[in-house]
Image (cartoon, rainbow, N blue to C red; front, side, top):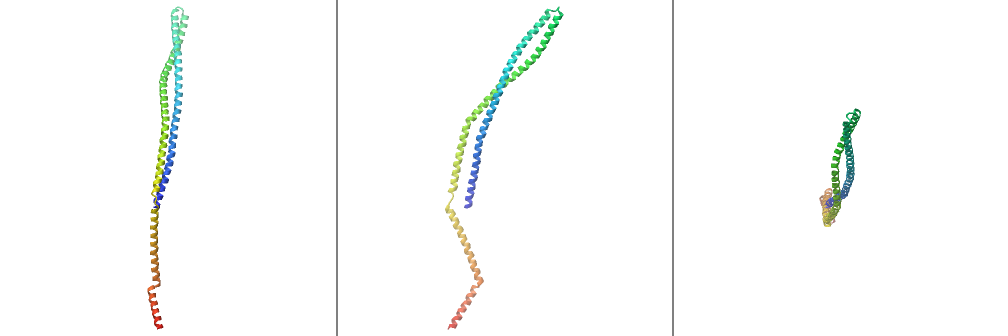
Length: 237
Protein backbone atom coordinates (compact mmCIF):
# COMPACT_ATOMS: atom_id res chain seq x y z
CA UNK A 1 0.00 0.00 0.00
CA UNK A 2 2.84 2.39 0.94
CA UNK A 3 4.58 1.75 -2.37
CA UNK A 4 1.38 2.63 -4.18
CA UNK A 5 1.14 5.92 -2.30
CA UNK A 6 4.76 6.77 -3.11
CA UNK A 7 4.13 6.04 -6.77
CA UNK A 8 1.12 8.35 -6.75
CA UNK A 9 3.09 11.09 -5.01
CA UNK A 10 5.84 10.67 -7.61
CA UNK A 11 3.25 10.99 -10.34
CA UNK A 12 1.90 14.12 -8.69
CA UNK A 13 5.39 15.65 -8.45
CA UNK A 14 6.07 14.82 -12.09
CA UNK A 15 2.78 16.42 -13.09
CA UNK A 16 3.75 19.57 -11.17
CA UNK A 17 7.08 19.73 -13.02
CA UNK A 18 5.33 19.42 -16.37
CA UNK A 19 2.83 22.07 -15.32
CA UNK A 20 5.74 24.41 -14.48
CA UNK A 21 7.34 23.78 -17.87
CA UNK A 22 4.00 24.38 -19.59
CA UNK A 23 3.65 27.64 -17.68
CA UNK A 24 7.04 28.80 -18.94
CA UNK A 25 6.10 27.71 -22.45
CA UNK A 26 2.88 29.71 -22.23
CA UNK A 27 4.85 32.81 -21.30
CA UNK A 28 7.21 32.15 -24.21
CA UNK A 29 4.25 31.87 -26.57
CA UNK A 30 3.23 35.43 -25.80
CA UNK A 31 6.86 36.58 -26.02
CA UNK A 32 7.25 34.93 -29.42
CA UNK A 33 3.93 36.46 -30.50
CA UNK A 34 5.00 39.95 -29.44
CA UNK A 35 8.45 39.53 -31.01
CA UNK A 36 6.82 38.56 -34.31
CA UNK A 37 4.67 41.69 -34.25
CA UNK A 38 7.74 43.79 -33.41
CA UNK A 39 9.67 42.34 -36.35
CA UNK A 40 6.73 42.97 -38.66
CA UNK A 41 6.58 46.58 -37.52
CA UNK A 42 10.28 46.96 -38.23
CA UNK A 43 9.76 45.47 -41.68
CA UNK A 44 6.87 47.85 -42.28
CA UNK A 45 9.08 50.83 -41.42
CA UNK A 46 11.76 49.57 -43.80
CA UNK A 47 9.16 49.14 -46.56
CA UNK A 48 7.80 52.64 -45.90
CA UNK A 49 11.32 54.04 -46.15
CA UNK A 50 11.99 52.12 -49.37
CA UNK A 51 8.66 53.24 -50.81
CA UNK A 52 9.45 56.84 -49.94
CA UNK A 53 12.84 56.56 -51.63
CA UNK A 54 11.25 55.00 -54.71
CA UNK A 55 8.64 57.74 -54.93
CA UNK A 56 11.36 60.35 -54.55
CA UNK A 57 13.44 58.74 -57.32
CA UNK A 58 10.30 58.59 -59.47
CA UNK A 59 9.71 62.33 -59.12
CA UNK A 60 13.39 63.06 -59.73
CA UNK A 61 13.48 60.93 -62.86
CA UNK A 62 10.29 62.48 -64.19
CA UNK A 63 11.73 65.96 -63.66
CA UNK A 64 15.10 65.05 -65.19
CA UNK A 65 13.46 63.37 -68.20
CA UNK A 66 11.30 66.44 -68.71
CA UNK A 67 14.36 68.72 -68.54
CA UNK A 68 16.43 66.55 -70.89
CA UNK A 69 13.50 66.27 -73.31
CA UNK A 70 13.17 70.06 -73.41
CA UNK A 71 16.93 70.45 -73.87
CA UNK A 72 16.92 67.91 -76.70
CA UNK A 73 14.05 69.70 -78.41
CA UNK A 74 16.07 72.93 -78.29
CA UNK A 75 19.19 71.17 -79.59
CA UNK A 76 17.18 69.62 -82.38
CA UNK A 77 15.99 73.07 -83.40
CA UNK A 78 19.51 74.50 -83.10
CA UNK A 79 20.94 71.74 -85.30
CA UNK A 80 18.29 72.36 -87.98
CA UNK A 81 18.91 76.08 -87.79
CA UNK A 82 22.67 75.67 -88.21
CA UNK A 83 22.20 73.33 -91.17
CA UNK A 84 19.74 75.76 -92.72
CA UNK A 85 22.25 78.60 -92.27
CA UNK A 86 25.03 76.48 -93.78
CA UNK A 87 22.87 75.80 -96.79
CA UNK A 88 21.95 79.47 -97.06
CA UNK A 89 25.59 80.61 -97.20
CA UNK A 90 26.80 77.95 -99.58
CA UNK A 91 29.03 80.48 -101.34
CA UNK A 92 30.74 81.43 -98.05
CA UNK A 93 32.88 78.41 -97.33
CA UNK A 94 34.20 79.66 -94.01
CA UNK A 95 30.75 80.38 -92.62
CA UNK A 96 29.42 77.15 -94.04
CA UNK A 97 32.18 75.08 -92.36
CA UNK A 98 31.60 76.93 -89.08
CA UNK A 99 27.88 76.16 -89.15
CA UNK A 100 28.42 72.54 -90.12
CA UNK A 101 31.06 72.10 -87.37
CA UNK A 102 28.70 73.60 -84.81
CA UNK A 103 25.85 71.41 -86.08
CA UNK A 104 28.08 68.33 -85.91
CA UNK A 105 29.11 69.18 -82.33
CA UNK A 106 25.49 69.70 -81.30
CA UNK A 107 24.52 66.45 -83.00
CA UNK A 108 27.14 64.57 -80.94
CA UNK A 109 25.78 66.10 -77.74
CA UNK A 110 22.25 65.37 -78.93
CA UNK A 111 23.16 61.72 -79.49
CA UNK A 112 24.85 61.42 -76.08
CA UNK A 113 21.92 63.03 -74.29
CA UNK A 114 19.53 60.76 -76.16
CA UNK A 115 21.39 57.78 -74.63
CA UNK A 116 21.08 59.38 -71.19
CA UNK A 117 17.41 60.03 -71.83
CA UNK A 118 16.81 56.42 -72.87
CA UNK A 119 18.57 55.18 -69.69
CA UNK A 120 16.49 57.47 -67.50
CA UNK A 121 13.28 56.38 -69.22
CA UNK A 122 14.19 52.72 -68.71
CA UNK A 123 14.97 53.39 -65.06
CA UNK A 124 11.71 55.28 -64.75
CA UNK A 125 9.77 52.27 -65.97
CA UNK A 126 11.50 50.09 -63.38
CA UNK A 127 10.74 52.53 -60.56
CA UNK A 128 7.15 52.87 -61.74
CA UNK A 129 6.77 49.12 -61.23
CA UNK A 130 8.68 49.19 -57.92
CA UNK A 131 6.48 51.81 -56.26
CA UNK A 132 3.18 49.85 -56.44
CA UNK A 133 4.93 46.64 -55.39
CA UNK A 134 6.30 48.34 -52.30
CA UNK A 135 2.92 49.89 -51.60
CA UNK A 136 1.25 46.49 -51.86
CA UNK A 137 3.87 44.99 -49.53
CA UNK A 138 3.30 47.79 -47.03
CA UNK A 139 -0.45 47.26 -47.10
CA UNK A 140 -0.02 43.50 -46.69
CA UNK A 141 2.32 43.91 -43.71
CA UNK A 142 0.02 46.45 -42.10
CA UNK A 143 -2.91 44.09 -42.53
CA UNK A 144 -0.87 41.25 -41.02
CA UNK A 145 0.08 43.40 -38.03
CA UNK A 146 -3.51 44.46 -37.45
CA UNK A 147 -4.68 40.85 -37.65
CA UNK A 148 -2.04 39.67 -35.17
CA UNK A 149 -2.83 42.51 -32.80
CA UNK A 150 -6.50 41.54 -32.96
CA UNK A 151 -5.62 37.88 -32.33
CA UNK A 152 -3.30 38.64 -29.42
CA UNK A 153 -6.10 39.15 -26.92
CA UNK A 154 -7.77 35.97 -28.16
CA UNK A 155 -4.55 33.98 -27.76
CA UNK A 156 -4.00 35.40 -24.28
CA UNK A 157 -7.56 34.51 -23.29
CA UNK A 158 -7.16 30.96 -24.63
CA UNK A 159 -3.91 30.48 -22.70
CA UNK A 160 -5.54 31.80 -19.52
CA UNK A 161 -8.54 29.50 -20.00
CA UNK A 162 -6.30 26.50 -20.62
CA UNK A 163 -4.18 27.27 -17.56
CA UNK A 164 -7.34 27.53 -15.46
CA UNK A 165 -8.59 24.19 -16.81
CA UNK A 166 -5.20 22.59 -16.12
CA UNK A 167 -5.21 23.98 -12.58
CA UNK A 168 -8.68 22.54 -12.00
CA UNK A 169 -7.58 19.22 -13.43
CA UNK A 170 -4.54 19.18 -11.16
CA UNK A 171 -6.70 19.91 -8.13
CA UNK A 172 -9.08 17.11 -9.08
CA UNK A 173 -6.11 14.77 -9.52
CA UNK A 174 -4.94 15.57 -6.00
CA UNK A 175 -8.40 14.91 -4.65
CA UNK A 176 -8.54 11.61 -6.52
CA UNK A 177 -5.18 10.53 -5.13
CA UNK A 178 -6.06 11.38 -1.56
CA UNK A 179 -9.55 9.94 -1.95
CA UNK A 180 -8.01 6.54 -2.57
CA UNK A 181 -6.06 6.77 0.69
CA UNK A 182 -7.57 4.42 3.30
CA UNK A 183 -6.54 4.12 6.96
CA UNK A 184 -8.46 0.79 7.18
CA UNK A 185 -6.25 -0.65 4.48
CA UNK A 186 -3.14 0.41 6.34
CA UNK A 187 -4.52 -1.03 9.64
CA UNK A 188 -5.28 -4.35 7.96
CA UNK A 189 -1.82 -4.41 6.44
CA UNK A 190 -0.22 -3.81 9.86
CA UNK A 191 -2.43 -6.46 11.54
CA UNK A 192 -1.44 -8.99 8.92
CA UNK A 193 2.22 -8.09 9.39
CA UNK A 194 1.83 -8.51 13.18
CA UNK A 195 0.18 -11.91 12.74
CA UNK A 196 3.01 -13.03 10.53
CA UNK A 197 5.63 -11.79 13.01
CA UNK A 198 3.91 -13.48 15.96
CA UNK A 199 3.59 -16.70 14.00
CA UNK A 200 7.31 -16.67 13.24
CA UNK A 201 8.05 -15.96 16.92
CA UNK A 202 5.88 -18.84 18.13
CA UNK A 203 7.48 -21.18 15.61
CA UNK A 204 10.94 -20.13 16.72
CA UNK A 205 9.98 -20.55 20.44
CA UNK A 206 8.65 -24.06 19.80
CA UNK A 207 11.85 -24.94 18.01
CA UNK A 208 13.88 -23.56 20.90
CA UNK A 209 11.86 -25.53 23.50
CA UNK A 210 12.34 -28.71 21.50
CA UNK A 211 16.07 -28.10 21.29
CA UNK A 212 16.30 -27.52 25.09
CA UNK A 213 14.30 -30.68 25.74
CA UNK A 214 16.68 -32.65 23.55
CA UNK A 215 19.69 -31.06 25.25
CA UNK A 216 18.48 -31.89 28.76
CA UNK A 217 17.10 -35.31 27.85
CA UNK A 218 13.89 -34.56 29.69
CA UNK A 219 12.28 -38.06 29.33
CA UNK A 220 15.31 -39.82 30.85
CA UNK A 221 15.51 -37.25 33.63
CA UNK A 222 11.83 -37.70 34.39
CA UNK A 223 12.31 -41.49 34.67
CA UNK A 224 15.31 -41.04 36.93
CA UNK A 225 13.45 -38.68 39.19
CA UNK A 226 10.49 -41.08 39.34
CA UNK A 227 12.81 -43.93 40.41
CA UNK A 228 14.36 -41.66 43.01
CA UNK A 229 10.95 -40.86 44.44
CA UNK A 230 10.09 -44.57 44.55
CA UNK A 231 13.25 -45.42 46.52
CA UNK A 232 12.58 -42.64 48.96
CA UNK A 233 9.11 -43.91 49.52
CA UNK A 234 10.34 -47.47 50.05
CA UNK A 235 13.00 -46.29 52.55
CA UNK A 236 10.50 -44.37 54.53
CA UNK A 237 8.36 -47.46 54.89
